[in-house]
Length: 135
Image 1 (tube, rainbow, N blue to C red):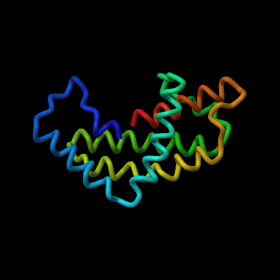
Image 2: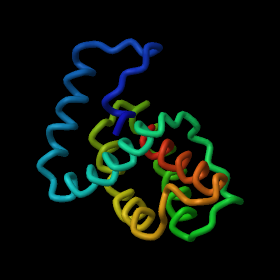
Image 3: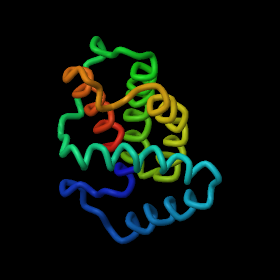
């Protein structure tokens, strides 16, 4: 979501580009899958923000549950797809692609406790959520 809304300082954004971003977001908001998707993104954001977590580099070898692997793989695909769409200034496609993350995000939150008693597992899960939030 941030990839479409956030405009990096290194990118010159003209008014037409800003309007394109806004139109893509406006077209996405009424979609029936948008609100359920945003619940997962907001949850990830709140956790990362509360923990002041900045590391988005999860270590796949340390995943304990299949839902962690599923979210990690989905994020890898989406980072590439959304990045390519944003580079092409196809913001609608970028936002629409994010809908595919709903199931992996929901499965992750339904299967694991982020604040695990094992510090390494907890840190890895927070990094996974930071990567989700950064997308």
